Length: 144
Image (cartoon, rainbow, N blue to C red; front, side, top):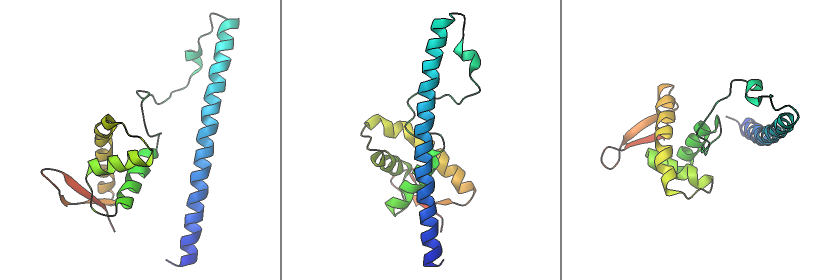
């Protein structure tokens, strides 16, 4: 790939990441505004039920560290940045470090999700098993 094409793609990616960040902020603000309107509507009309106005939404436990669609890119980025075949635990730790999260329990909660991402990406040829580490740990690497 030529340097110019590479630079253009890197620039385009930066633009998209910035736009995604801006859109996430806008969605957060809209959610707060809607909640405020719902509170006022409930005061004005006690029979009003905001739940009836909601559309089908993804629901999580409320403790999701990574937003929708962010898990896959974070897992692949962690694997790339580690630069060597890595276990799911290593990748989960790197992902949390990138978000500056130091909760020890978060690694254990994140590991099944990272494992699922790698299994999915292995099926399409983006990552591959690079062997076994200590014990039964599977090591993963970016497929080149």
